[in-house]
Image (cartoon, rainbow, N blue to C red; front, side, top):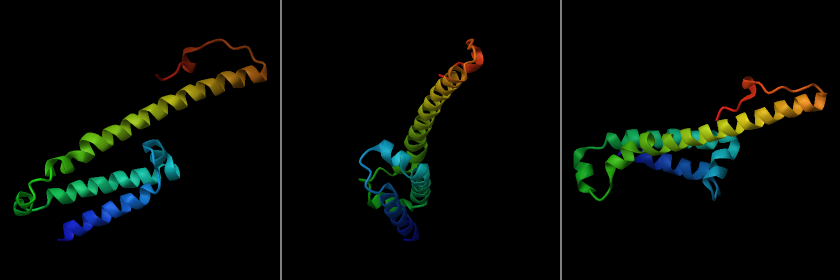
Amino acid sequence: MLYCLSISESVGKIKLYSGNCQRAESFYNLNEQLNFNASLNLLANIGDRVSKFSDELRNKYQQIDWQKIRSFRFSDALQKYQAQKNRRTRRCARKSKCYTICGVAITGCSFRYSSRFSPLI
């Protein structure tokens, strides 16, 4: 029973943290990713709690894909988070290169392309 209450609380918090976001990207960027990261932790909590359910309970509700719930945090959420983080890192690298080139041009220095300014992608 305690595990069910914990899961219910986690689901409620995820709903609260996601607010009125209509798109995944707006949820990801909301509150400097604090809400998104907290929600990932809550999903991990749900997976942990489900794994502690008795076989009797799981057999009673066989229509629920318990394995999918347990493995969600590993297979889907973290991979999507990592992919989004990698895309964001590449965007920042491109912007950084652009700012460096613009900074050199603005100060009037001569610019010679160097591999240290190559993008990370």
